[in-house]
Picture 1 (tube, rainbow, N blue to C red):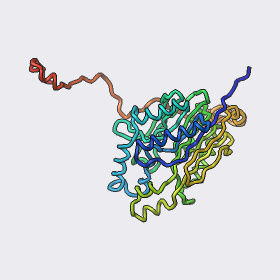
Picture 2 (spheres, rainbow, N blue to C red):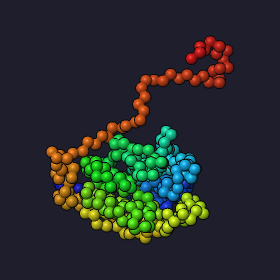
Picture 3 (spheres, one colour):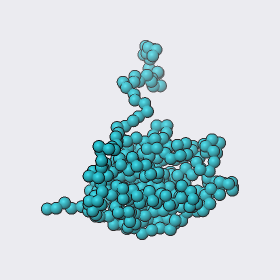
Picture 4 (cartoon, helix red, strand yellow):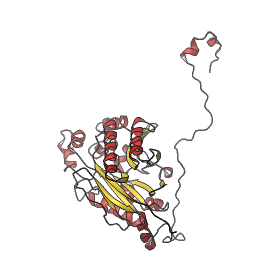
Length: 343
């Protein structure tokens, strides 16, 4: 009997967060998951930094006196693992029996990271992808990821993976993902500037997502945020110069590409919230692989090759078993506490 390949419906989300409000954005995320699954989706991809919102202030002013208070607000609304926020998304994924990829600002230790969290239909947090190198002024906000958080998940609907924003413009990233035989990809993007001459406008970014599909022979869910007046008001206040930077409300570009680069979903207006849906047939990838498989039969390792290090790269490696030197209040009140030797 020949091999059977999965068929399912996928959803790419275009929406705005409840800006810098963790609890409210998690509630909105869960509501969107429920809406998409009610329309038949088995995989849902969210925009970049959706929880609790993209740090737009990095493009509107200096990172010190202007930017630091926003950073503090983002920090206090970042997602920790585990946390109540993660639990709520997990429960929604389980209740709807859906795969979910949601991009968040993650707080780990004392630093923030831009992270895609992946949930399976049983509600398990099956893994995460951290953006390897935040782009430009994003480095004021997020730290670097490493190869250990660049996974592809083998699931019952196919091999699933994701990247965020301009990671799609780095050929070595594309090759690393392709080497894991990815089949369905979540491309998480922020909103885009309206200026067609800006490198942050819709054009180059849509091209990058479409190219990713062709270069890796995957289905690609391109999901993006939109600007809202609420976000512009919060970031810009009454400053007309800052408002000029965000010169048009909107900025979304959300659609789903087939492995041949063609749009296979409905499309959403640039300034509206909505969900793009497409029917995925993993078997169709065979015909793209017949033509090209850059990490397989179409590679030339005798000429060019890539070293892909998937080991964790912690900045500090701790060794040994540190001695617990604390003494509780109750212990200090015991009569024999006087016998405790100085440490």
